Figure 1 (cartoon, rainbow, N blue to C red):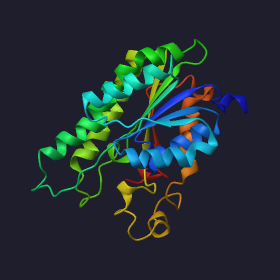
Figure 2: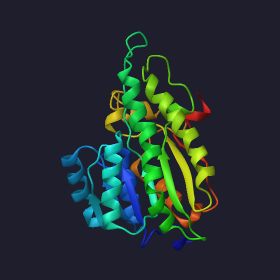
Figure 3: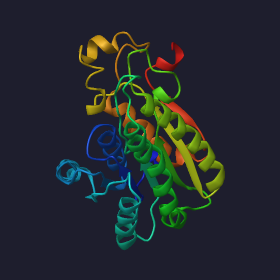
Length: 257
């Protein structure tokens, strides 16, 4: 059973890997035995995260703006130079935009959809050759997309993240579409996080994580191990019969909204 969840010898790519949920995912993968490439726009932040995680295993940083085709090409080229195959791609890079309904700008849709949706599609397509090379009949390669609980249930009134919630719903459908397209060599699933400590949830947790978490069905916000656990599960042999799933990791929020 222990071997079922081990990732020894596997190579994973985690975008948005410089902070927040990306770090939680990367830490779990490293502790399970994988080698990890981290990518994000902010080079200094990315390098600091890679240095922090280095005691856990082989981890390398490749800066890239994955909201652009050029950034996708740069990351793909760098990975192709270093690896003959990869086994898991975590499309975790994401952006958010908040503005009132009356003032929400067109750019607030363009930027968010470029990163959250188009970037997921372009990078997945670009890395299919490496993912296919890493797949076996008994253990396909994986693509895991980070969606959001906001893509499953409508955000509460006053949370003016119109393009973010719409983009995450699009990620969920793109996940299902890609799962059918890439089977059986590549499994494609999504996680839909609820409240975790990150820069993106800073305002939502302004009252304090304990106070906010106490109102959730499970009585707390998400912990790093909660995200690490689902990441390792979806990258390991334990999930070889799952594709096209969107899994809420939300403390039960989706059951009450």
